[in-house]
Length: 204
Image (tube, rainbow, N blue to C red):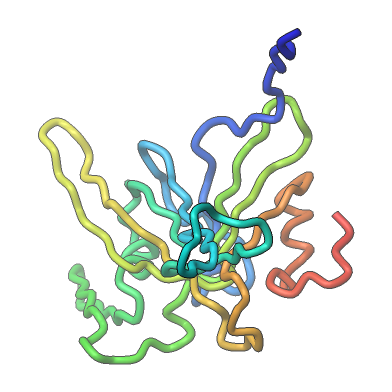
């Protein structure tokens, strides 16, 4: 007899929220900004089955993951506060003169300082009917690119792509620059810091 239909129960719902630890704000988790149209996570990994002459089909045990670039979280941002401008233009400086302000983007070919990166970028999502939240996180990330999009009778959207980085202190160059968590609350997740990256002893 054909197997019965199984009703999906563990669903992720709504758009989720981005949090991060930003330079100049201490260790507090802050909302990165309001979004519209949802977010997308791309781990940028693919399976490679070892090729060889005469092979007709992929073979069990010959698979390995290959990282095809840095993992990304992307979406349309709405907030355009000074904080957000600093995220969009990592490494930039700002100067005020009375009622005016100038944001000076980082120069080309200039290596960015550690303070230019977003620490512990978290995409937090609700789960249907459960007391858990699902989280995708980058220990270190940076805005790889953005594009401001204006439309008639609409707010200006900023199409933003956050790109993950291995921490400078990482010692395993083959490590994956993202983590996934199922936790009961943001507070429980924050309790993992500063061990977000190396979570030895975490029993969740």
